[in-house]
Length: 119
Length: 111
Image (cartoon, rainbow over all chains, first blue to last red; front, side, top):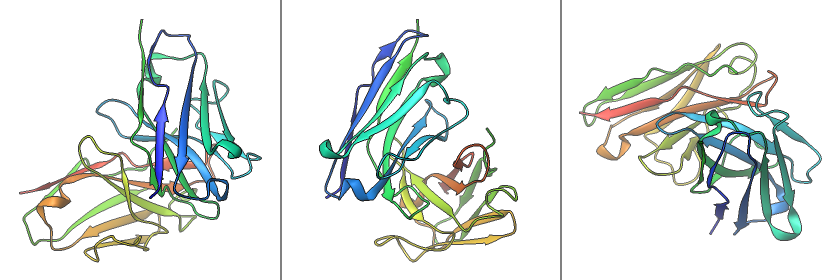
C-alpha cells in the first residue's frame, strides 16, 4: 500500500523558517517525481514545487520561488521542503504528492501537514 | 500565477449527468493533453479521477469521463450519486513560468 506521511507543520512567525518532511513507502520512491501542493484554509489547491526522481530538476510556483527549496533523499525514501522568509499567505495544509516520472498528473497524495504563519 | 477557470458550483439530482468546465489558455489546456481532475471530499486529501484528459485510473467509476476542446477541458459525471458530492479540481501542465496550474475548484451538490 502506498503511503505518504507528512510532518513538520507548526505555528511560525512571519519571516521565520520551517522544514517539512514526507516519508514514503509502498512504492519505488526513486522512480517517482515528487511534488508539494498546498491548500489554504477554505481555499483551492495550489501547486508549490516539484523535484525529479534523481533530484536534478526542480521547479517552483512564482509565489514561493527564491524562498522555498525542495529536496529528496532516495536512500531514506524522503522528500523535504525548506521554507524560508515565511509570509502569512503561506498558511496552508501542505500535501506531499508523487507520480511516475513520465507522467503529468498527481497520483498519490499524503494527508497533509498544517503550516500556520502568524504573529 | 493564473488559475484555470471552473464554475464555483454545479448541482444535479440523483441519476442525472453534470459537466464541469475547466478553461485555460493556449499555453496550458490548449497546448497539452495533460489535463487531470481530482475529487476532494471534506477533510480528505484530493484523489485522482481523470488523467491525460480522458484516462481513468484503476478503480475509478465508468460514470466519470473527461474531454477537451480547444482551451477548455470538461469532466462529466453521469448517473449522479450522493457519494459524488465533493469539490472537484482540474489541473494542467503549462509552459508558463511554473510547471503546473490548478483550477479554481467546483463544488458539486447532489440535490
